[in-house]
Image (cartoon, rainbow, N blue to C red; front, side, top):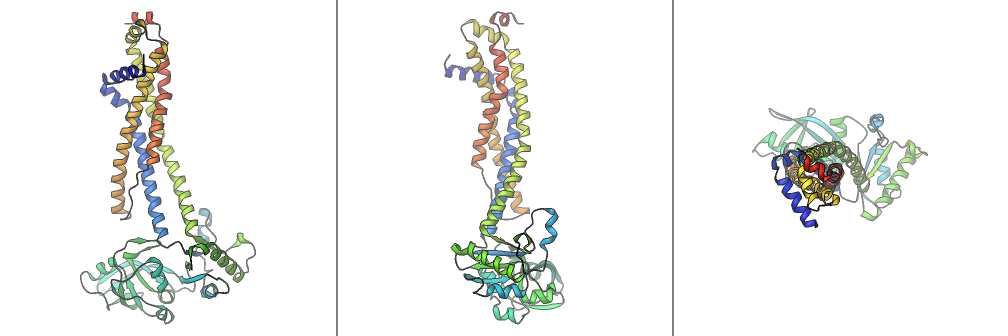
Length: 412
């Protein structure tokens, strides 16, 4: 028998039992579609986080207080007061950190904001004008506060589009005063809708000078984090190293293991995100892959039943000249065709579910959640489905090929 004859015989054998063939591959479809869904959602989450990180720009360095977290036991060490105005002034000194273009402390709090009878609990972000430049945020109405406002601890605010809508509706907000922690802040600027950019949800924020936020809103004398911008991308590693040396000198730290701060560049953040999402995706895929094994066992059982039902057919084929290898190839081809069809169907179903999932996540989690079709996962899924067909179809095919033609013809 030629390969074409084997393929045709296997195809007609499966077509003769359409419903059984469809039910047989359901396990494969569930397994493949689950893997596609998990990898697509995982890739979408990774892309979303990376896009937010890239929103800070490749020249940006983030300095956070506390030792770099390596597990739940050290999470409490993140919230320390190791970054104060002394550290800001030392880092701004070009002798200590040459190549540093700018630095802005950040103070973040979630606090109620009130206007007349309306109250909104939102993000209060204390920053300087540099942060607007880094985030590429420019007001659609009014203007931004500057360095002089920072020095004078001015009671001015720039608000996002959602804050404006929720507090003022269609009314004009520019020049109005909102109340935060009992203090009036004059709205001098309104930024257009932009969504999540790096660490901030621009639409749902009230930005004020960091000195004002530090004294009147947070009531603290430290910052978290400090955002640094290097003059160009090439010197980012050197600037990051100079920052470490400067802060260690200020804090009398000689052992790097005892750093009371940690520094993150864009490259570091991308590497961490890839590592974390890769581990999580691998774990979820391994769980989803269990259904593939279950589907493979189901295919083996059905193929064994099929061999028993078609004993006389096997005997007739051997009687007219079919060899053991021909019979083996026929039944093995049937198993592979089943799993291959299940793989194709699983990819289609998984892609559809992934697309729906991205729409749901865009609505309820992050409106810019990207849909991702993992091509390598689709190729891998087809390969795995064929491999399962071979592994779980081999035993039934061998059993069929070893039947005696005389005994098979006598089988009732």
